[in-house]
Length: 310
Ligand code: UT7
Image 1 (cartoon, protein in one colour):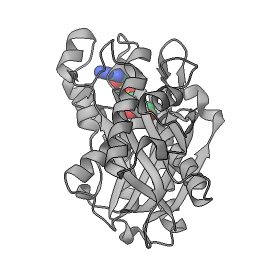
Image 2: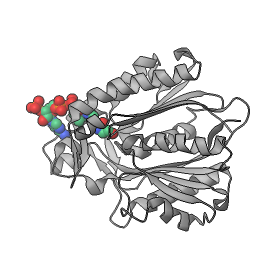
Image 3: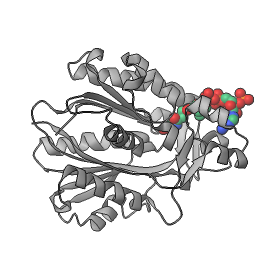
Image 4: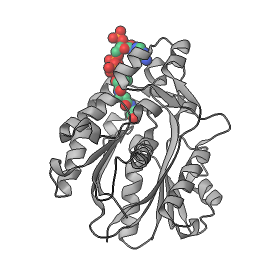
């Protein structure tokens, strides 16, 4: 039996910041942001809401959706680059709040590819019969490391959390293949010192190449052809990068997950958040073949091919 995703959850902070709001603060325009990134608005967490609060809300929903109780979880993995503190980890903070008393807990630092790294790690523990259930959360409060005066980055990011429970699924469903990778030589292009610092053009070039290659690689590793893929869930960084990956797979527009216009780039949270909306709106159904693909600072990347369903 393969590991698969048993349930999903997400949290989007209620406060909406539109492109027009940003126009009032920095030298940018709604037209520039929309045409270069596809982003129309993003959600920003308030001062009282930290990363662990968003992770907790998404995790609670994922457990409900997977129909398991907190004490059944063997391991909690939280992918984030914006933890509440450098220690204790966000994973231990939500372990306590969920009452997941039988769970080990650790955070994963792989930036926007973090959710992919988390799910692949969870799969290893589940398929080796080490743990029955692993909770994986992707969560970011990027607003606290964003320089709101820097138009190169301030327009791109948002806050939020997405979560899943990884466990065994039935029949031929589950994670069919994966790919993880890293190129530390590109670390300089996307860094956090005091704030996020980015060479947008270099990250863009890398992302366009890597997203397409990884999406194709996991499809082939699963023994499938491009035509067998029902739905693509790319990291929601920039619509132009997402479109490039979609075109490499030869999929029509309606077969790609798109939530970047509503939430901006929420880093490790973007893929699970987008998937929750796809499930709620009927774009992903049982037995669909889904490709998820992400990239981020490091540079890192990761992709999964999943036959959906429990
Ligand atoms: O999760 C990973 C996170 N990072 C990414 O995904 C970033 C990947 N890169 C990108 O998405 C794109 O490179 C950006 C959206 C960041 C920039 O788009 P671009 O088409 O690569 O624009 P550019 O950097 O080539 O800049 C074009 C112009 C520049 O003006 P000049 O030098 O041509 O006069 C910028 O100064 O646009 C200017 N510009 C802006 N103008 C209005 C840059 N940011 C803005 C802005 N508003 N917010």
